[in-house]
Length: 385
Image (cartoon, rainbow, N blue to C red; front, top):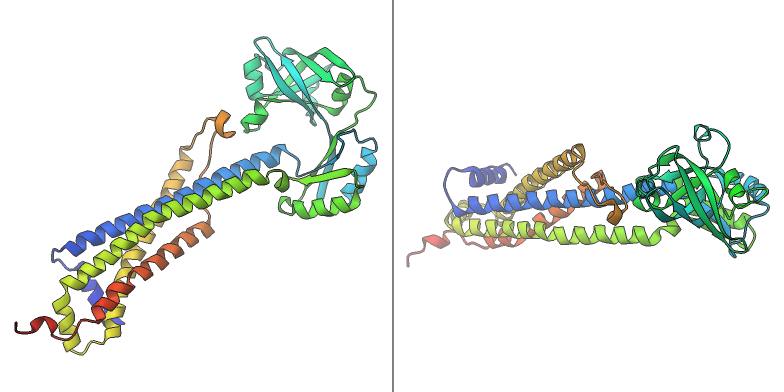
């Protein structure tokens, strides 16, 4: 092994000018670019998926329980007490929502009125208080303390116009929520519809471990009657996360082509080296070098080039991810992508998979030139023509 390493170092780091050195530099540069691009692409996909997941979990129930016919849940407090006893359930709250029109000083918008536990400081005096999403408040010309009107439509009640006080403006980070949501307490929701008490349309369940929500949903189905439906956040958002996962895989496959091209450059480099050093190889064979030593030498040379490219690409990719996060580089139009900023979240597993795939391709690229060198016969180039 020591002999092969010495020959590799003399071959790569000698001062003699050759085309091999140029192709080696191109191969390493291509590998650096490919590995760095793949790390950044995977970090971007993971960051977008993670940001969407965090925002959804903060603004949607982990598990929702509702009647199949959409009717109110009359005995919801008794049912809530039963569900709280289930493992992994942290809290159960009643929830109801209705479509409304919000009339502000500058514009009228269709919105969704939903129940929410508003902080005590947001209730200052009598009347009905609501909290409005930031985008919706901006379009309607509303701010904390403003008086707004809401037009309510409900079967059997007709249209009702009511005045409410805006107690605050909230921002979730999800454009769809911030541009359509109006929050109100459960007690005020009942007042708006003239009901003596609040009756929810569904029960929102918060769980301790969000990644066990499917298991918790199964236990809840066993506890509830047949007329109830149970949906956890993973099931509700499965199409979204499936699309994001597919996008991540496609990006991996496409950018992997850059690494493949760089690996082919390594094959070209080693083949050129075989041609350039044909006489040297013949001399080595004459001096007793075995075929496996020549194979090992070229394999080590290819792996050395690959390792340099992989390490360089990993350092460059992680550095660019850090710089992008530090400067909040990836900003998106919130009305198109729902979120305004995407952090690059690099994961050790992604980096290791990328490095392993690149290393395996580099190893494969060395086989043909290595075996071509081993077939050179002793003193072949010194025959008298």
